[in-house]
Image (cartoon, rainbow, N blue to C red; front, side, top):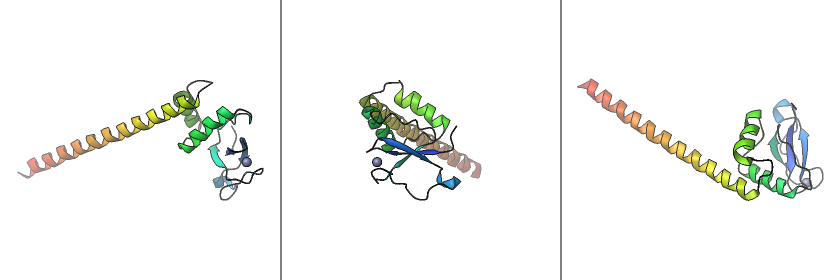
Length: 132
Ligand SMILES: [Zn+2]
């Protein structure tokens, strides 16, 4: 395992690794050494596609813009299994799966909120009963 986090330039389709901030690496957002644009942190477990693989980079760009990072073995496994799903994912497929995951997330949050409100109501009813 590498300690170095991968910073990607989506214009050059290249990735450069640096020590993470916490471990005394670069301060602030590093710029691409080639085009001087801002790079994005893709995480320690990011495996950069070859720069000619434009479609793969477009997918990585979408992942990054959607807040996905290869920060831990777990997040890499999650992205591989639930977002990319195959060795040759399509941009459209990945976009759809990200949307579905977000929907599921929102539904899970709503269910949680409803459940908490029910519990609160139960609690306040119990308290009222106890006061009588
Ligand atoms: Zn660049």
